[in-house]
Length: 124
Image 1: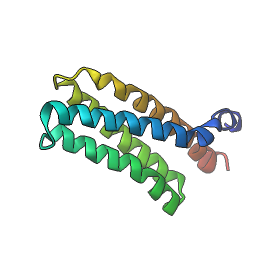
Image 2: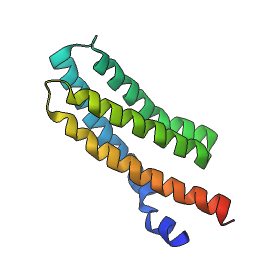
Image 3: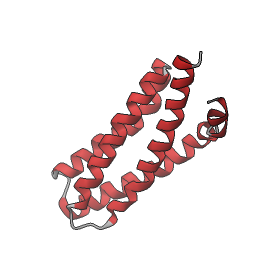
Image 4: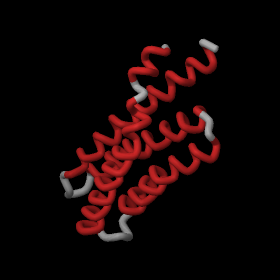
């Protein structure tokens, strides 16, 4: 398990850059929804919710400083991202596939945190 965690340790240093890039993509998608459907559309509201959820992640993981909180936050954000992508897919905009990088990132980060949890509880 230690080898896997060491191999994925690059995630810690890349997280801020990836987070900013994914945020830019989400803002751009929100703009596309706003442009085609308006700000009162439920998909726009859900996109704002997802953006707040993503931006709150560093705050609550820093405040609670627990792997369990980070893992749960990842799972909730992954669920919300998949739901948002499905909602975007039903709109006339075709850029919904731009949510795939966020899904991939959350899966990788969740695997990393999950490995640390396994090490904490099963290999301690």
